Length: 94
Figure 1: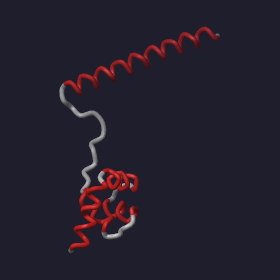
Figure 2 (figure 1 turned 180 degrees about the vertical axis):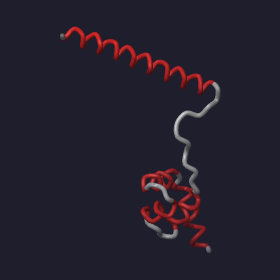
Figure 3 (figure 1 turned 60 degrees about the horizontal axis):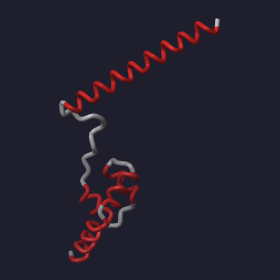
Figure 4 (figure 1 turned 90 degrees about the vertical axis):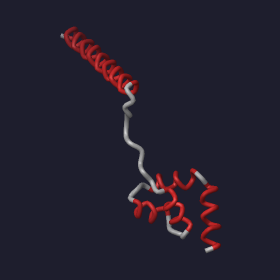
């Protein structure tokens, strides 16, 4: 009785490996043809996010207003502190 299940398990494992191999080959071919694989990057208005932060909005308020996650807002703000400083000086001079 145990032998049958072992054989079925081995066949299932072989089939799984074949599927993985075919998927990887298809992805390789798609990349070579210039197709993009995966999720498209978000289109963010980074200047507006910096400006909102300089105006004193909280990270949660910015995230809600732009309909993005708080982690994305933090990543954008962390990305270029020089731009944040230049926006601070623009706001002070206005």
